[in-house]
Length: 267
Image 1 (cartoon, one colour):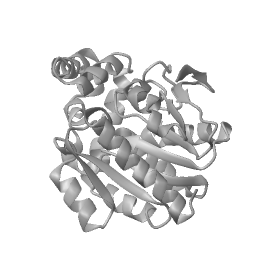
Image 2 (tube, one colour):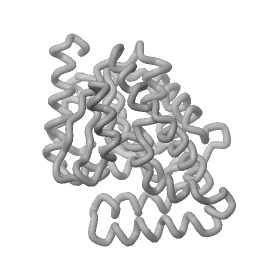
Image 3 (cartoon, one colour):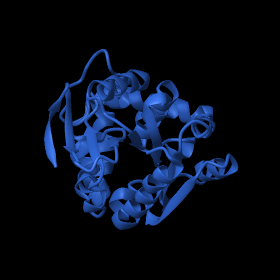
């Protein structure tokens, strides 16, 4: 695995000469590519090139005043992928990254191979730290709310490796950006259309929702996805970070989906 700035985004990546495709990993709210280190290093994914950029204002990528809202982040990342000339691209978005990937899939489905939604926001029940941040006005969050949410994450990180990783990334993010994106996530989740949007993407691209259970995706999220017949796989026992909580099982489910793309002729 290598780390470097690539076209303006700090990126963890591992390129493969086997050429099955490019798997772009999109991190969640307050996070960074750090959370994907184990996945990028997985020998079971050696036939895929993996790319995990830090979005502007997160991780080691500096904030960008022109790239703050979720649609702006999606467009920026879309252009970044195009500039790298990645081929047979599969988007794998975690949490907020699942929403950003949804936006990209809706705008540029013609050059994507598939969409893996990992615990992406679907319903209000999926808004944990984002809901806490959204209760504040921006100035108050930056002054005190950011530290309060951080304390919750840090405390859970003492016993939970996934939260420990989250805490490391959270300390690097732009507080005002965290607040803005939190409000966007809460608003989108409350509108109740994200499951239908994923279903609609599935009419053009192969899709799958990978959920941690029982401490991951909200029950209402799973019920809605099942009702709309969106393909779902649940990893048990797991929370919001199944690729950290259940690494072997996660890799198995991801590879099963990726292998199926070739059967479908998408690869």
